[in-house]
Length: 328
Ligand SMILES: NC(=O)c1ccc[n+]([C@@H]2O[C@H](COP(=O)([O-])OP(=O)(O)OC[C@H]3O[C@@H](n4cnc5c(N)ncnc54)[C@H](OP(=O)(O)O)[C@@H]3O)[C@@H](O)[C@H]2O)c1
Image (cartoon, rainbow, N blue to C red; front, side):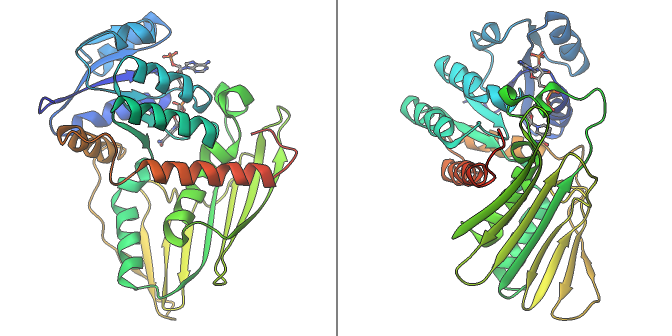
């Protein structure tokens, strides 16, 4: 593998724009090519983000020898198809969240990557940002004591023009896979796999969930209460509460823009924990990590492992099964 990682972007939508913008903050990385279903869109995107080449369909880009890794930025209902396609062409893959529609798809994608000895990682970008790392460090150092409750909410009302993927069942619509996934991911990170799950969902007119309430229960008494919504604006904050202290990640808790408030022991006095300043949106953290993995010849990230993705997908499947009557 060359020192400079040559990226290709598959699907030139909203998140692709942010990722492309952040690649300039990644050492030894270049945007080699972009592919869109629409040639005009691909050309304009390539021009804006200085990609060397643009393609008006996905497969032509995959035939190119000038790409080391493909970032898949299509709606999650298409991730299975697009990851399998990239692997067929022998390309390493960083695939946006939600990684797949369900654990069966996720396992097939991972199995194929392993069989072909090709790098594959879910783009769970929050796992690489400073506030997440600091939260995990405080937990590991015991600064919170026993964490007995986790309360996370994520909600906003999609504004026109609403992307088709938000409510379309075929594209993986609904809050759970789009935003509730972050709530689940943070709860799993801090409390681990729950011993039991309860969930309830409100269906939108298309049948996908427009609200989702989840309860994780643990045999040691810990509980996590997770809520996602497309029908109300929520604080979009996360609280991790222990018997020695607590942490609050403020608005848009899953981004580098959130502050990390630490409340030691029983005191109400809060400390704002200083975090490294993030350039851009913060997608460069995961992209830099992927570059390191590729240079080391890894086929799986030691940080966002295949097991991490499978646990997340299996948990999301269980939540869907519990929030019955809703198509997600
Ligand atoms: N990590 C994050 O912070 C973050 C934030 C937002 C979204 N996401 C994830 O990124 C993925 C894309 O989200 P987005 O907000 O970027 O969506 P988007 O703006 O709708 O873009 C998705 C792109 O996928 C391509 N596409 C291919 N087939 C499609 C189809 N049948 N219908 C619609 N689009 C199709 C299109 O690109 P072309 O026409 O150019 O081919 C489209 O622009 C989702 O899985 C989402 O969960 C992650």
